[in-house]
Length: 166
Image (cartoon, rainbow, N blue to C red):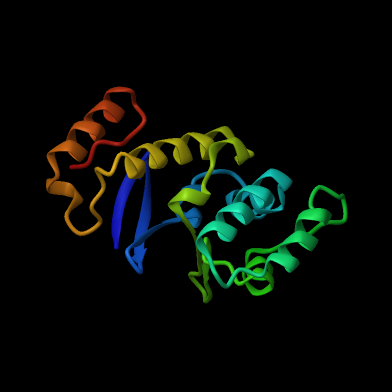
């Protein structure tokens, strides 16, 4: 497990089967009505389509017929979908929910697409994390000593997008 600080928010990144998953819960912790934002994000038809396509590409056990039904219902006023329902119905690996008192929702780094964000703070956090993770500069085991990661963080700190640690 590793943590990065984005806009004064500490965000957990976990690795499962050598894949990085970002805590959506941490990302929205300092945003008003943040937890509701995760479910709004997941109910967005564009988000569902994007994650569904990703799942079809990378998840051999993805329930495509169930996904088609969800996709067809998305966007309707009566459409409701929780993270737990999405996972149970589709056998998703792109989104992970950890139950319990301090439950967390994690998303694979590739499934957090900024065009599907419903809040500008959330969108900016998504964008920063995507840049960090997709530049292959992030090593969850020892990212603090990676000089390239430090250079990237310095750019974000100068732009007031990351909080300087220490």
